[in-house]
Each structure stands twice: as structure tokens, then as C-alpha cells.
Image (tube, rainbow, N blue to C red):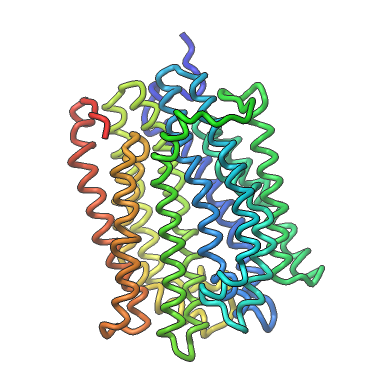
Length: 457
């Protein structure tokens, strides 16, 4: 009998993960280009580049928060839909997908209105001042108009990948990224729009990506088709419960970014704007160095979820091992580059020598324990893929809420000064990631290696 499209219980586990993960990795690469092209063009604007880049950094917590709502309905929805497909319940999988889509539309409408109206007050609270607020407000008020397309492209693309169409999912990102790269210099320089032009290019590009996602999910080729708007309350609870992991991670990341900006302003003295700009560049660099593993983890989660639904527990164990070893290898390579040759990467975003030096200085602290993030990636992805939301949520909150945020507030006053903000991330990577992986191994991986199932959390 011919295997169904997206049947991950057949063939080598590593090949299945790579077949999904490599296109996802390429898509992540293009997505990172999508995000950083704005910063590259803005950072190199004559005269005002550094101030404009700092203003964009002030927007990061709110942009991250918007992405959090995409995670809320996509992570849980795509995982539960994939488990349902592994159990041959395709009709139920389509209802799960329809519920996720409807909620993205409703939440997107609320966020658009609320964030547009509150932007001036919130951006000032996040560290904006008379120098940086005009750039931050100019960018964000245009960006937020595209909230619904952003949520559709980010929130529904995982349903395409999870069905076994990673190349189609990759095209979602490529379409938006290529359009953004073309439109950025046109709007920023040719039309003289500056940061507003960068935001407009992003909105138009995300709209094109969203249109592509909807076109595919409604065509006959899709294994699961988006045919109607619906809110199935039975499935919504499960979607939100599992999606809280990715949502909490992004929300706490948004909260942490806000606290970091505030502390950098408080402890940076005359160089506070420079430190906020350095953190903005560090976030951009982190997106680049994290992208290879994002693809492998995304592909691995789909393979794990399907095999868990099919009760192929040894294949789940093989998936965990493959994700961990790949993540660790990549992170060690990136760690070495960031510590010993960081300048070429940082110079992509700015030619301001003082900003480059400050970013190198602070980045070596921030990324000092980066290999440990392989432990977090393996542990967190396993908890999500196997529908264990309680553990996924706990370890998502541990690193950011329990460790990073308090340490960011405490360390500067304990003799570390402004550098304490960056040491907070170092400590959280060592402690939080180790705790996540050890717990996953004891509660999950040992049983999967023994070919035994798990009691539901």
C-alpha cells in the first residue's frame, strides 16, 4: 500500500527530519534576511542610522509580542493536527486547523486597534525618548497595520510544513523576503521615507506571504484543506494549552527585552543609547546564528508528533537524539565564530565603529554559553511535539521569567554595572537549558528508548 503524503513512520528518521528540516532551514534563512534587511538598510542610513536602529530596537518587544500570538495558535494547532493525522483522523485535523485560523483573525483585529492607539505611550515606557521615539513610532505604527497578514503567514505556515510540504512552506517565506529586499531600498531611499518606508515594505511583503499561504491551504493539493471559519471549543482548549509554550516563550522574551532596554537606559549613562543599539544588533545576530537549528527542530517536531501518534516510540527516541546532536554541533560552531570573529557579522548592520566595538564587547558575554542552548532546543521541542504542555510551559518560563528577568534587574547593582544585563543571559542559558534537558531525559527520553509509551501529563 502506498504511504500517505507526510507519513513519517516510514523510512529513516534522519532522512525524514532533513527532508522537512532543510527546506525549513532555508526558509528560516530567508526569513532572517526578511527581518534583518530593514535593520541593515536603516543602520546604514547616512547621519541618522544609529539613532534609527536604536528606535527600531525599542519596537522589538512589541513586534515579538505580535509573533507570540501566532505561536499561541500555530504551535499547538499544528502539533495536534499532526498527531491526529498520525492516528488517521484527518477530518478532526482540519477542524483543528480551521479553529487556529479563525482565532488568528480575531486576535489580529484586536491587536491592530489596541497597539496602534497605545503605541506612543508604550514605546516611551519601553525606553523611547525625544531622540529615538520619532523613529520607533514611525516604524511601529505602519508595521502594526499589517498585524493580520503577519499572523496568517507566521501562524498558518506550520500547518503546511507539518503536512509534508516543506518546499511550499519555504516559498511562503521566500515570496515575502524577496519582495521586502526589493521594496526596502525603493521606499527607504528612492522615496525618502526612511524608517516608515522599511515598515511599509514589511507590511506589503507579509501580505503577499499570507496570500500564498491561503491559496495553498484552500487548493486540492493540500492534505488538510482550510474550508471554513470555525471555533471548535473542544479543540481550542487543547490548542491554547499546548500553544502556551511558544506563546509564553515569546511573551516572556518580549517582557525581558523591555526590561533589558529599561536597565540599559538606567545603567548605561551617557552611552545608554549606544548600549540599546548594541542589544538591537545582538538580537539581529542571534536570529542569524539560531536559524540552522530552527529548521532542524521544526522538522524534528513534526516527525516526533506523527510517530508519537502512530505509537512508534523508538522512532521518537531517534528523533530526539538527532535533534540534540545536530543542535549541539551547530551551536558550538556558531559560538566559536561569535567569540573569535564577530566583526564581519556585526558589520552587516552598521558602519559605526563605536557601536561595532560595544556590540563585540557585550556580545561575547551574551553568547558565552551558547552551546547550552542545544539542551533547551532538544528538551523544549520534545515536550511540545509529544503534547506535554505543562513541562513545556514550565521550562519556557524558567529561563526567561525565573532567571533572565530577575537577574537583569539584580546583577547591575551587584557590581557588574551595565554588563550585568548581558551576564543575565549567560547564566540563564547554563542553568535553564540544563534543567530542561535533564528533566526531558528522565521523564521522556528514557522511556522512548525502551520503546514504551508515556502517561499523558
